[in-house]
Length: 347
Image 1 (cartoon, rainbow, N blue to C red):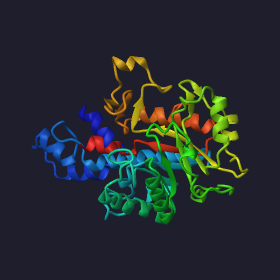
Image 2: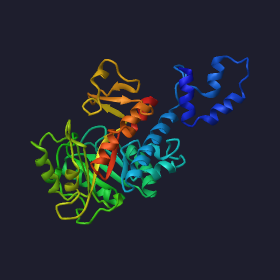
Image 3: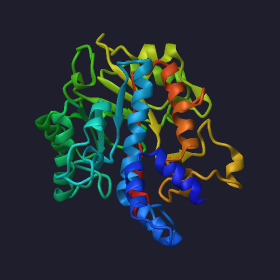
Image 4: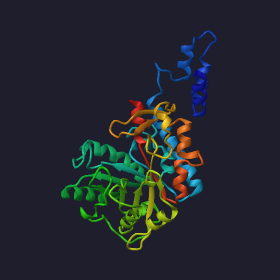
């Protein structure tokens, strides 16, 4: 186990720390002293909290590198986990330039409404905290896509106006399940017929993942084609094994008013979902080493040790990886969820 951990640490850029530790080790030192000197994690001395942020940041950067090699215009949008914009995760920290350059936008839930519950105002201190990071990313040229959760007219209007003032792309979800197109509840903010060439051109977006209200894929496609949202964030599958085709995605890239828009695929990288194509039923009895605890709030979703190679192969590198499925369907980008999985492991 120690040899495997040492190999992993070296692979992940800890060479300098290891060498410095070795310089201070003598032949008479104990195994425990060696572990402390080279910072090998053990059950008694787990990985530092910085490690988990570093690994998620590196994971997103690698997703970006792989995707943009195949399609340089492909957009990378991590949702939440905004602390990754600084190297140490603090508001005053040094900007994580490589990370900020690898992405094209940030998705942020419940900036003004939806935390701790739907249709309630997010605490002012929490909003200020998030804005501090989001504005750093925006200043580096990234689009900010806010999704608030509220349904009362005055709250919807306040949320929309706040986003306009900040220059953020905006969506108000009237249902947490993201199962409705809320055009009956309010007009699309900043509706326009412009062609959306890059993500920062967008003035609004639709975040829509639950298609259960639609009897068929044809009905669902027609409903979306009838809208004028600048960006659509949707699932890769209409049903568990019914993946959207190139023709489906191409049809969605034109707004009802004729303008061109971006169609972005949702993909969770901080949790594994037991209804996804990659899930092996044997994992219920013999889970892989990277599979962790089930999310009590979302049954069927399991935390993952996202730094493990087998999980990253599932997401990026395998021939039928999640990312390759998205690229082959000709989506314009990917919306990465559970970026804040580092919080689970830090705790």
